[in-house]
Length: 547
Image 1 (cartoon, rainbow, N blue to C red):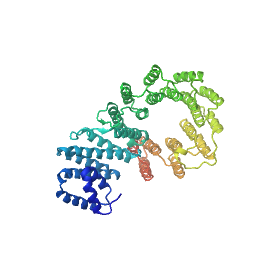
Image 2 (image 1 turned 60 degrees about the horizontal axis):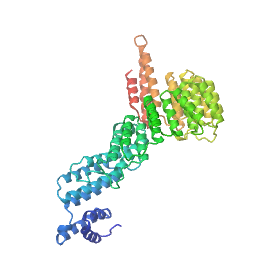
Image 3 (image 1 turned 90 degrees about the vertical axis):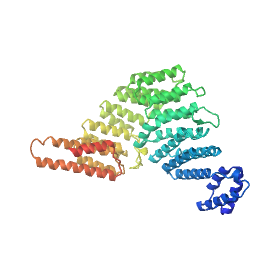
Image 4 (image 1 turned 180 degrees about the vertical axis):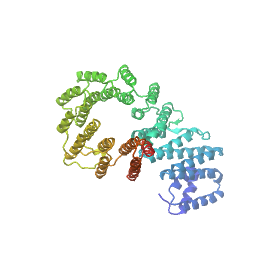
């Protein structure tokens, strides 16, 4: 309800103060139309209280009135994404607590706790992507630290509500999972992973956590989210600490196949063969029943560690016990990926024959088998395979976003790259044109491979022509695309310098200045198109200008 006049507000304040002065003050303030009305009402109640028999017992102290106003201002700042000033307000509230004594100090601690709780609920809310989200989450973590490290807050307000701690944990894991840009990666590496462990530790130990419900157990879902976030960032050292802490806690849930799958993914990503073998062995000791998801994780982990023979043995064992563990299409494709990495085309062909019989074939199968053929330098087989298995969709829309890429674009890109690296640029361009004919729209990786190939051959004219075509197809170049062009200009400049101790200085100076001008114009184009330069971009460009 919104109050329409100050007299009604005075009446509510007057009777509310008799029951709970501070809460009434906060509730009334939130429902007031404007600050002018609020100030008139507050003045009236203060004057009336000075003549009242209830004055000494029910009138809130000026400090608590000020604290409530600061609390509301802090929440307002958080709602308007002004978290820096919100943190300053929390600092000012803590400074007030240093000079407050008696019962007012306890009530002030409650106000500060409520302020930080409301602030953190807003800071740890969705969305989790982007720089603003990271700054917001960082502010929430700072607010938690202020409460936990404070020496002026009385118990229990020097502890954080368990609900807030859980929100912080879930938000950090989400930021790591969703954040892919440089800012998110930097935040994950420098802040999130250790902070996740400290929050996880507090939730299990109860230190610094105010547990209203009495439930100390962390759900398996939350536990696996934590492990998954650490595995995604490669922080398996912290993942091991989390695992040990979970196992030592009496009320923790039993580890599941999903947990071991996450651990295997992390060790495989780090190419930590010892960690993979240790996890598999530990699962056996704990009598963990391997499901198909865990089987796929085991295979993928060994393959990522270049132990394809070990993966193949496990895969063959799974085929022999189909009645207990039935491999799915991902199982077959994972093993196929291992053969592709080895360049074992014959084994890959044998496996795909089995997949045909089992009706376990999809676009990933085609792409992976093409990669196996390319790694074995059998380009003809790769081309024939694509002609046979490419999905021809005449309704395909050009210039769509990446998540709508044609399912076989990855294989065509790999074939173009393979031809280019093998010195057959002419055939690479033929494949590129063939893609358009059959409605397989090239994506940014396809264009970048071709641009890079022509740039390496110092054919800048053709490389820039393809860049124009890329932008004309409504596909935005990436920093990698431009870096390939800058690298080519750098090589051209270095090549021209080799003649400086010979002759034709005028021609050489003219060519050197031309490649510098070209690099500067290309950089201006990059910025104008909204492509963010990376550290590598700046490094290559500076080297290019120095030649």
